[in-house]
Structure formats: structure tokens, C-alpha cells
Length: 602
Picture 1 (cartoon, rainbow, N blue to C red):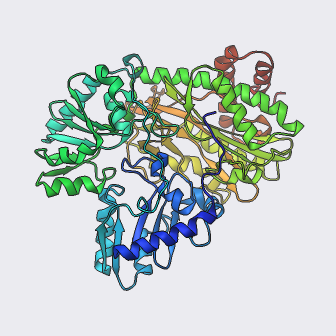
Picture 2 (cartoon, rainbow, N blue to C red; picture 1 turned 180 degrees about the vertical axis):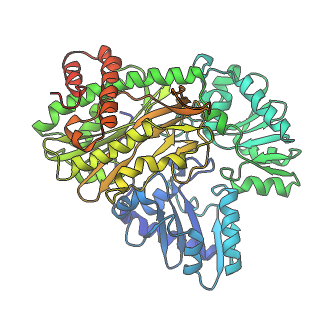
Picture 3 (cartoon, helix red, strand yellow; picture 1 turned 90 degrees about the vertical axis):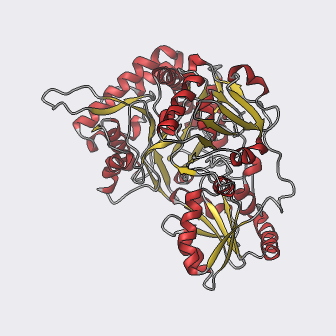
């Protein structure tokens, strides 16, 4: 299996490791240190050798960080992880609700007499460091770059990943890497910049049409790159990892050992662009120390990568039809097996991966499947382990959030189903979540509108009942790349305008701690909207739905929905039957016909 269920960390391991860290801090002469989740590439998912936060604290969520003083060890988590963190960390660590509590404010409170804050300049961005300096230095707290303190006490740290990179063919990418390099180099010349330093693995993967397997579930290569204004490129990777793609890269892409990245930066003639939101502080330190002028600006690959071309969109459609058929087979199996008893969360995850593997096209899962039965569904990013595995019981909801990595596309889908009679209030909550998902699916909006403008559409049905959820409504999705891709998002914090070709998730939810969780998720792609009779000439955008899997009709109380919402559900289910029906047979097809029946019908 791609997914494993081993317990990767235990709370009792944290306190002795924390004591070691504090002893090192005293020897180093620092009063506090930062331990981020991120690696040097600022990825959400990290290789085992870079899982420092989990190793130290026991917290395994995909976002967060720790700030450690001699007296307090704060583990900063957002709303997705407030339940999870309490189960994973020992009492020696103090959960801190972020971003309500800002790191700088917390440090000032914990260090009233000032002091020295140590940090690894490879693991913190320019913006992070500048923001902390601006707030901490007036309070008497000095930032000091130090060698990574966790690495110095992590004696059995895993080796870096060594799998080779692979070429991503033109028939999948839709544009050659030579054309991409030329396109980005023209942007550099127009801005008067000689080069850009690239540190995001998915940017490098997109630019050079390469893939890797360095990070679990994400087919990205861990590497650094410098793209020059003449469209040539220097790629920095561990020895041997790129040997198999030399012919694909061609003579204009030069290979170097990864440790040569910093010296190569110092030898450049500026201005050199670095992204202050994603580039490590060390890049600025190296360039400034060598007298190379810096031009701060966004990674120039981000928006071009987000705007999927027709080949990528066609591939993604095909991947979703294949994945949709696997999901229908899984849901039909689940509907038959769950009421009989005997299933657990792990057995459900194994079965789902089996249906995806049966396509003979699955390369990996796109993230570890979130399978939460009953109260576990209220843990937003729950990961089932051998210790937490629980039965799937009648009278409870089951939340399954999963996805697949296929050569032609990346999928991400959540369905919440009831096993037997749903628990009290569950159907009403499900209806409000579904209303929010439908609102996003039906949205039309002018060019220039960003995700922050649409986010409230998904929340409004919940808000009217005094409810909400503590995560964004949608994230960007790559094409056989990261399942969480920026910069496009549907979120209160996103100011990036949505553009045709951008793929996003649409996943409102509701979580009642100790009882159940509900999330419903489809993927959508931004497209030009067809003109409406009587409308003006203003160009409008809307969404094409990519995911075709039925909702649980047993949880849909049609009396709570408007006529337009009921019609949308019936039309969606008719499309599911039309697109997925020919891909399944037997019991799965029989189940699908019933699952897609119009509301009010049998």
C-alpha cells in the first residue's frame, strides 16, 4: 500500500528531546529557538529527514511550528488541528492558537527581559524574518542565525531521499520546458532582472517538466534552480538524482551538486529575483554578503503554473473520470459492507486504495486518506493509525477525504456518508454544507475577483445557523503535482485573482467535536462564462466541475433546499450517471443508478 498506519511519534518521546534541545540552547547562548514544520523548500509536506517539528513535539499536522524557551514550549496550530494537537503532544508542550495569537506577541510575553532568538536561515523566509525583526528588536529580542539545533540532537535522523528524477512528457505537460524557460526569461528581462532563484519544488518541476518522489504523495523533485535571463538554467540536486533525465533537459540546463547552490548565487551579477514569501532567508544573506543586488518579487512560475493549459485540463478531466469510477465502486462496496459491521477506519482506507489501484493507472495517493468515523470525523486532518483505528458503527457518519496521483492529473475528493440512521442534527448540518458547496459551484463573477470574495458564499448557509469551519474553502491543485498548490485559493486571506485554467477544491465543512464531522469536496476549474441573455458585455468567469461522484441522498433533506439547489443536485447526479455509468458494471452500476435518482424519487 501507499498509505501506512504506523504511529510515527508518541507524546512521551517529546519531553526528553525537549530537554536535550534546551541544553543545546544554553550552550549556544540563545534564549529561544524556532522549530518550523517547513523544510528549505517551504513545502507543506516534507521528507522524513525534514520532519523536525514532528520529531521534537509529536505533532504530525501539515501546518504549524514550535517556539521554545527555557520555560515554555509553544506549539502553534491553526483551527484545523486544535483537536489533533491535544492528542499528539505531551503536557510539556503548550498548544497555541495561531493566527489569533501572533508569534512575535507570544515571544515578547514569554521574554519580557529580551534575549536572543535562534533560527535556521534555511527554514524561514525573508518575510518571516523581516516581520519578526520589526516587532522583536524594539522589545529587546535579537534574532541570530544558527546551525539547525534539532539536527544536532536528532542522532537517528533519516537520510535524504535518493530516488531519481523522471521526465514529464510533452504530451502530458502541453508545453516544452524550453518554451516555458523562454517565457519566464522574457519576464525577467522585462523586469530588468538577470536571474531568479527558484526554491519551490513544484515550480522547478513545472518549469523543467520533471517529476520526483522525494516527498510522500507529491511527485516533486527536491532541488534548487537558477533561471537566467537568457533562458538557460542551473539545476542543483543531490548526485545521481538527475542522471536519468540528462537528454530530456538538454544542453541549456546545467546540473550541479546541491551544495553548489549558495556559491552559485554569490557568483551572480544582479539584480537577482527572490520571492520573499517562499525563499529562505539564507538566499538574501548570501546575495547581500556577496554584494549582489536583490529584486524581491513573486516566484515567476507560480501564476503560469496555476493557469493550466488545455492539455493539462483535458488530462485532469480524464483522471477524474477514472477516479470517479473507483470512488463509485468503493462507495457501493461501503454501502453494502458497513451495515454488517466488522469494518474499521483502516480497512476502509485499504479498500479505497485497492479500488484506485485496480485502475492500473494510480502512481500514488495524493495525500494520506482522511477516514474519520464518528467523532474522529471532527478532526479536520485526522490520520488513522494502528493506535487510533476504531470501528465504523451504525448510527454514525463516516468522513472520507482522499485522492489519487495519476500521470494525467491529481484528484482530491471528500464524501461524508451515514451508516444506518444518521445522528441527531447531522442531516440539517449536511444540508448547510451542501448548500455552501453548491453556491461556489454555481458562482459567476467578473475578472479580478479573488478567492477572498467568494469564500463567504460557502459559509453563508452555516453562518445563518451560527456555525462555521476553521479552514479555507478551497486550495489550488496541480496536475500530477502537489495536491495543495498556490497561489490560487478560496479563502478569506487570498487576494489572488482567479483566472481561467486555475484548478481549485470546493470543500466547505462543519465539525462538531465529540460527535461528527461533515465535509463535501469537488474539484473545479475556472473558465470563461457563457454570456447570459440580457446581461451586459462585461467578461465573466465561472467554474467547470471536475469531480463526478454522487452525494449521500440519505443525508439530503430536500425540504431545507431551494428549488435552484434541488435542481442543481439533480442535474449533477444526472451528469454523474451519464459520465460514470459506462465505466462501472454489476452491483456498482445498480448502486449508482439509485444514488443518482432525482431528489424525491426512490
